[in-house]
Image (cartoon, rainbow, N blue to C red):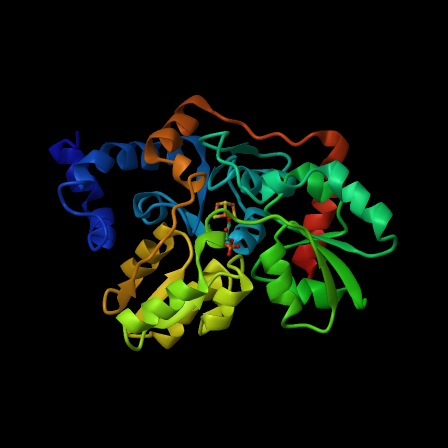
Length: 327
Ligand code: 13P
Ligand code: SF4
């Protein structure tokens, strides 16, 4: 567990995360960090990590980090033979759609998402029958099979821009009901929603925000748009994980709370040691399936390779690419 040589080689990485990982824990991570850095060189691999990955992954081994939109955009320009997606399955599928010739690995196949599980391709076909001619905008938190039935995708970072880019009075936005309602509150376009929810963000309540303000005077409240609308109504700002991170970086609120998954605050706090982060967080059990150990296994054993059914890949890719064309 963390020989002297390994600890010396990984010391600069520990320096970055020391505010959120205690010194006695680092030797537990150091061997895997060291091995992953070597394996990345040997296999010409890159690690894309979502903002919800734990700090030892996010700051320790990732090459590209960001929100779902940034990961999709950056997956297009990866110059490597192997992409390891440290995130959930739909993110790995999106990376594969945009990089069909590369090997895309997900360290745990079971890393799913309650939103992706809330809707099937057959549901989307029924919506199309029920609302003929109404474009279907699909959140990227869905399977490739659902994307293939859709006109265009969106993320929390571009949802309003995607809705308004279509130039129509009415759209269907699936499957996140709260994202759809939150965007509907910002635009004149009528939005038909689906009853899917993020199991992490649906837990935050407006009463919790009021209590936070009472307990922590002056706290600035940032919320993810997957939270219920009454939570956003109580917040100071709503945006994707990248938008929240940018808000903290540019506005530097002395005391701040991020109403989103737990690791997000750890990762942002590493970059802003001067700020006070209040941390009522909810864990995403799917994101937490990814560990240094299974990232190492993924690179050593080339597993688990993500494939997209060729019968639907072109249609799903088109929906993602249409999204990426929206600025
Ligand atoms: P973003 O990082 O795109 O805001 O998405 C949040 C999320 O819940 C991803 O699963
Ligand atoms: Fe899905 Fe929510 Fe987890 Fe993101 S945080 S992967 S939306 S369950």
